[in-house]
Length: 403
Image (cartoon, rainbow, N blue to C red):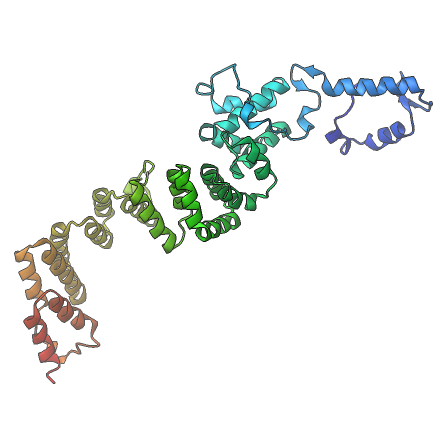
């Protein structure tokens, strides 16, 4: 006789009838019908033994009903069993994920523990496994993720694991800080970021800022300053924490690590994607590539900013002269000559500087303008004055506002 799984009973049309008969002491007859008979004590003992055997006997695909068994219980951290079939470095994570729901119970446990231990290699596959159709695979994957979200790692002291398991996910980070488990705290923050848990991240930032002097002392005493610096970097979401992060990294001689940045072809993406790519290039310090990208995008404003950030003032001066020469309106022309004067002053280009001064100096019609309220006139005399051309600036002011 084959019994339905517990998870199947609620959906089985005959489930209620079967359950009622079993409660009334009925047993199935040879013809499949239920006969009302009183169960003798020895028959009750036999049936109990039979059910017990069903729950513990292993078959090629694992325990009967293992798919609806309770989530796996953690083994002692100090004595984690190792999977001996294939070395961890050679076993693909996808193969290990499929092994979460196949093989014997011990094999599934070993795979689960090894996936938990090797977070860097297995995390992506574990996250995907949380949506697996096999309940056992998804529950084991969820258990692994929850351990990471609590900051419980393979080197977490066994005596502290229980304390972390007893806390909620939002309380795990403060607990990790109190225990000076900075590497685990960093993993917990990375998981909170991945799951967009803003409540946990906000509380973590507050706790770190509040106890910063004590935590950095503890990190120094334990030789974990680099782990602590990484943690500060993850939570540097305010100007104060950014300054703190930069000073701490400078003292430790650390440099930010940038992942390889793939920039799309300018012609294949829209303006918004182009702007995002340009900002990314500037953010990682690839200024020359940013200049070339802006030039290919045919965006003069982007090119100007990229050249300024790259410190390429000589190139900017030449570029602005070309733009000023091609400008169609007086206002546009004055703006480009102003940038050309700034760039020529910084790059030490006397030829372009003289051109810019001459183009911005007094011209016919200035006497009718208002140097305070006319933005075009104000730009000209102010940029001249700021770059030492006082006489030219005064000429504009004297002619337009003699008193």
